[in-house]
Image (cartoon, rainbow over the protein chains, first blue to last red):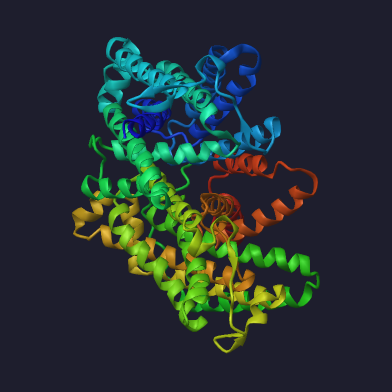
Length: 282
Length: 334
C-alpha cells in the first residue's frame, strides 16, 4: 500500500512540475500555452540524446538550458506580440506550434518509441516495509519535492515572484503599480519551459518516448490546472498530488477505468466549485 | 489584426432575414452538388470530396459554436465519435433496426451536450477550451480501455443491414452517390443554421457572446441559450458521425481522438468561423491541401500548424471571410 502511495507521488510530482509552468504563465499573462506539453516532450528527447554522453545530470542540465531558450524565444516571438489580442488567439497559435513541434520531433528522432535506460547510479531497488521499490522513483520524488520547494521560496522572496503572485491576484492593479509584465515575462516563460523540460527528462526513463507524448501530459496538466483553479500554485499542487494518487490507485484497483478517473474527478470538482479548488477567477 | 471572435461594436441593424433568398440559394446549391457528382468521373477525387464534405459538417458544428457563443471547442470529436460508436455498438449487440440505431446516434450526443452544457457553458474563454479538450479525451480513453465492448485500438467493422430508411446501403458507400447525400445534408444544415442565426434566438446568443452581463441585466436568461447553441452544434456534429459510419462501416477510437477535434477547429478557422458556410469551405481547402502536400512531403502536420498560425495572424476572418468581403465590395456595399 505504501509503495502504491509512493508511485502516486512520483506521478503527482511530475505532473506538478509540468503544470506549474502553465500556472506561472497564466498568472502573469492570463494566457494558456497549448504547446506546453510539446516542451515536456522536447525535454524528454533532449535529455535522451544528451544522457548518452553527458550522463543523467548533464541531461537534466541540457534539457533545462535548451528549453529555457525555447521558452524565451516563445515569449519574444509569440506571446508578447499577441498579448493585446483575445487570449483565445494565443491558444490557437500555440496549438499550431504544437503541431509543428510534434512534426519536428518526428523528423529528428523518428516515429518509433524510444526507451531511455534508468541512470546506472540509481538502478536497483530498496526495501520499503517489506516491498521493493526502485531507487530511481525515489529520486524522482526527491527532485519534484526540491523543485516545488525551490519554486515556492523563489515566489516568496524574489521580486519577480512577487510580481507573478501580484499579477495572478489582480493584473490591473499590479499594472497600475508600475509593474511591467513584459520585462519579467521572458524570465517567467523561460522558467516554465525549463521546468517542463526537466520533468520531461526525469520522466523519460519511466515512459516510452514518442512525439505524441506531449499531448497526453498536456491534457493531464490541464486537468490539474483547471481542478486546482487557474493561476493558483497551491491549488495546482493539491490537484497534482490528488490526481497522482487517484490515477495510480485506479491503475491498481480498477485498471479498466483508471484513465477515466482524473476526468471524473475534474467534472465532480467543477460541479462542486466551478472555479476550481482554490477558487481563483478566470 | 482583429479578433476572430469579437465583433466591432456596431450601430447598424442587421439586414432583415430573407428566407426566400436563403431557400433559392439552397436550391441552387443542391443543383451544384448534383452537377459536381455528374461531371467528375474520378473515384479518387470523389472519395476525397466526400470525406471533405463529411468533415465539413463536423467543422460546421464547431464553427457554429464559435460564431454564436464565442467558444472554441477542442472536444467535438466526442459528439462525433459517440454517434459513430452508437450505431456500431447498437448493430453489434442490440437486435434493433439500423434506423433506430441512427436515431440513437443522433439523440445520445445531443442529450450529452445538453447535460454537459449546463455545467460548462458558463466557464469562460480559455478555460472552456481546456475543459472540452479534457472531457473529449475522456471518451477516447474509455473506448481504448473498454476492449471487450469496443475492440479497443483496433476498432471493428459495422454490420449495416442492406437497406437504410428503404435506401440501399450501397448508395451510402459509393463515393459518387454518397457525395450527393452528404452535400445535400450539408446544404440543409447550413440553411437551418443560417435561419437560426438570423432568428431572435440567434441574435440573442450573439448579444450574450458580446456582453453576457449586459444581456443578463436587460433581463434575458443567459445560460440556457448558450446551452442550446452547444446542443445544436453537437447535433450537427453527430450528423457528420452518422454519415461517416454509413460511408465507412468501420469505427475505431480515432473518431474520438482530440486531433480530430483539432482538425475540425483548424478547418473552421481557415474557412472563417464568422460565416455559417466558412468552416465547410475550410474543410474542402484542408483536404485538398493535405492531398497535394501528401504527394511530396511527410510533414503535413507541421505544414497545417504553420497554415493555422499564418491564418490566425494575417487573415483572422478566414478565406471565406475574405471572399465575402471581396464579393460585397463588387456589389458596392463595401
